[in-house]
Image (cartoon, rainbow, N blue to C red; front, side):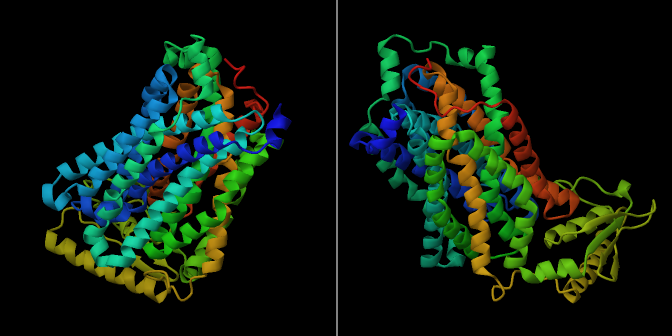
Length: 552
């Protein structure tokens, strides 16, 4: 049966199902990722009451809020999808997503309505997350249940392209708007345009989805009276199903998620925040890599029909573990060679009494650093300078060593505002002069920016994404029976991608802020991907030959 399915061409109905499901999901991802692509501007618009570094991290936390609630959306809409059907459930999800995105585009900023602006923004992000929690499982299940045996990897891989295409579409709309109206106007009001035009995408998506039929597997099950009356308790209250949910999370989606977000979001943030590449150039480089890499979703999805889903996903996780540090080091040399050269020639070392050093992650901006250690580290973080840590004798002020130059830190405990301001000015001048003398660049020199190498590196990261992501929809669908499929596959997918993946930028930057080394944020995806590789290899079974119609 699998051979016959693989040999025949795709039918007109199958093409319509894939096109309609994929197009709607592209628009939904477009809505969701606009925020991530514009995080730096949103930080200034909605969190302007904080210092620049804290505002950016808080904007990332608001971005993460949408990911945190995704599993709850999976539970709510997964349950509906298994009880009343796939089609109407993800029609509701796209309405919630589209309207939330449009409202972000017209939402007054912090300067206009104060603290209400970020509060409403976070609520809208959470609504987006709830909608996306119900969207993906519905689309993947819908397409898989229309796919013939032996072609599910190929057919569902089109759904897997939608996240990347949605990100690409958001980058293109942003770049187009920036080009037409200019950077100053875009930063002031033009950033709203991509959010507002999403209402047109919503109208197209709703029209397309209204014309779709219910999936044959669900229709057959409903006609036979086999639909689940309690999909949540069946999925998570029975150990035989719950253990598969847990394995799907730890042995598949957690590693897939961190590889996905490292390759497509962390790479973008790394270029702009750590390597000081201007936002427009960084977006163009990522967009080009997405164009080159996206067809590999289809390639690896189709390949998984032949050799299995598991070996491809596991290989992607293993390659991430082994290559992330050398690849991101190479990215530094290609994108900002002056920074790489300065780091190699003149290492920066903070020597301080450990008792003086507190946790550097300060997303709310309410912590006022007063010790010489904290002040020195904050000054370096503000300049995106990596540093090593050394221990000083107890009670001595922190020092910053740049090459052979030593700058002594200061404390503001028990001193007047005037004296503190004078000490800050003296320290900042000394640190700035030392960094300049050691050739630490204030921003990337675009004349030395190696575009070809940067695109090749980013494309490699995207190909790793396609390896872990291309086959995973088919594999998740095949792991669960039809009656609880929408619910069961949605939860591990969205915990993996919403929590392990969505929190990656915030977690990685917190690690960097604490340790001082701009590469240390990579430990997070490496450890999670390594965990998935080990658990997946030992406990997750291959699923490509499962008959999902018999799996009830």
